[in-house]
Structure formats: C-alpha cells, structure tokens
Length: 386
Image (cartoon, rainbow, N blue to C red; front, side):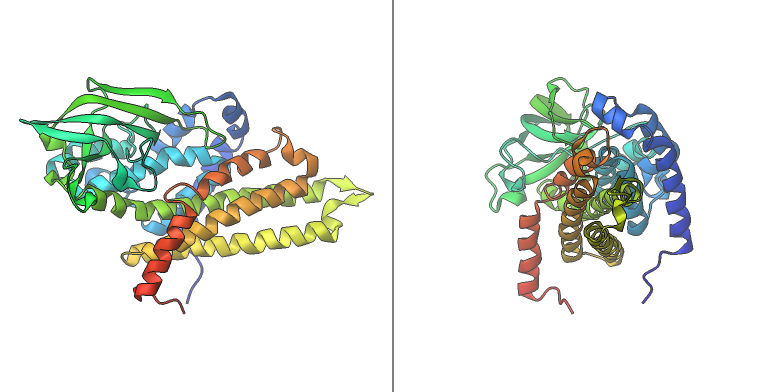
C-alpha cells in the first residue's frame, strides 16, 4: 500500500505549482476584488494544454488520469478557486463529449476544445431545478431536421465563452420515469434566440462568470443531439459528474491548503505579548488540527480519484466531496481565527478563502444529498466499508 504520488505525478504537480505561484497568487486578490477577468491566466492554462485534460490524445488532448486531474484543481484552487471553475465546467463537458459524442461530433469539436480555441460549459441547472435535475422544464421539440428549444438555465459557468454549450433538455416531457425523456443538445451560442441575460452576483467564486441563459425557440440541428440518441441525457450528464466530484474534492483541498499556509505564516510573523502568536498553545492546537484534517482530505481526494480510474465510484467520490468540502470550510474559519481581526479584512487572503469555501458543500450535489446517495448504496450492499 503506497500513499505516495508517482514520480510523474510529483513532476506534474511541481509544474502546476510554479505556474500558480508565478501567474495566479500575485494577482488573485486584486483581480477578484476589481472584477477583472483573468484573460492572461486563461491563456497560460491553454498553453499548458489544460483545456484538453479530459480529451483523448487522438483529438489533441492530454487525457490526464484522474489523480493528475485532481492535482490540477488542487493547485489552481490554492491560488484562486474561481479560476479552477473555468477549467471545471469545460473539462466535464469535454469528457461527456469524448465519452458519448458521435464520431462526427468528436471530430468537429474536440480538437478545438483541446487547445482552448473553443471553450465550453454545462447547461444543467434551471431556476426551479438544481439538485432535482429531472425537474427541468426546458423542452426541445423536433421539427423536421431541427430541434426547437425553449427554456432557461441558471448558474452556468463559462456562459459568455461557451460554444458549443451542452444543454440538458426534455425531448419527451411526458416520459415516465422522467429521466427517460431527457437528452443533451450541443447548442451554438450564436444561434438566434440564445441569450445570456445577466451575470449572477455571488458571495465568492469570482474570476469566472455564472450566468442566466434564456433559450427562446432556438433552432438546433438534429445532428447536434449528443450521441445521436434521445432519452439518455441524464445518464450522459451523471457519467461526467463523477469526475466533477473529484474536481470539487480537489478544489476543497486546495482551499484548505492555502488557508493552512496563511495561518502558519501569520502565526510565525504576528507578535503579541512579546512573542510570536504561534508560541501560544491555543494557536498551536488550531494549526495542528488544520494540518491533520488537510492531510486526511488530500488522501481522501486522491483515493477517490484513483477509484474513478478503476471504474464506477459514486460512493468514493461522494464521500471525498463531502469530507473535503467540510474540511475546506473549517480550515478557512480556523485560519480567520488565527488571523484575528485581520482575518476579516479584505487586505488578507483568508476572507476570500472563506467565501470560496462555502460553495464547495453546495456545488456538484449538495452534501446532504450526497450523503443520501452514499447511504443508499451502503444499505443495498453495493459498497462495503472496512
């Protein structure tokens, strides 16, 4: 049993850390506060091939294994979690297309998505359907050689840059069970009737936009039906979300790492009553707990990623996402406590880490919902914990 990364993984992590420390860390706080879009960082990630990390090499991607995939999100989130979101939705969409697309769809889109020439996201959530995706109302009716799509989507990451955008729709609104009437269409964002109406103001998760999209009788060619088969859209989406939970577990680990780093550095620098505050036992106890939970979260994230490499891993990825996201939130709170009043200031990193950490327990399935997913599989005997 070896808990160490391979030499290739360590070299890849070193490359990522260098990029993050040079290109992201120095500008993250200023750009996040000003609302500046990270154009230069996006270009740097494209130059590294990261937009192709879930795309097979035959289409120009780098086809990372799940542990390397986790390393990307951990390291980038250590610098600025919002930047990881730009890659997150794109990579899930690309994986979905690589797994389920027709040969023509793969040839048409994947090579340009791999280089970052095209970027994409995932159009799942709606104003009245978040966790319950089967409750979506966006419909697509077939008229001749085109689907006519009507509805709205919410919280769409990369909405202003995604083209094409895979959108979950109901091709048969009367189907029972409901998921058998759901499909995914690859929609050209320049189509008439496709409108990005607004950027949604958020507490955190800045650097990338989250938008509302209105689809007003958008005509989509029939050949843009993902995989060419109706009624399997829910299965297609869920197959990609397994990697999404690895993504979120790794992002959470990156936030927790940065929170710990900031707390440790501050504890050594800040003096009170004639000594560094790190000499006080109460601070030492917080640092020790943060470090312990951080290491546990990291191992959990890598364990889940390796489980994905070996096959279907709903339980492992669910467990990792739950645990790591809660460690991230607690680490950010503990880091703020170590900083005292300065932790509440926007001049220090920890307040941003706190705001970003809250999303981790909500995105890619809320933690309470994931707990029920894990529990049901345990009760069925599908997974044995020992």
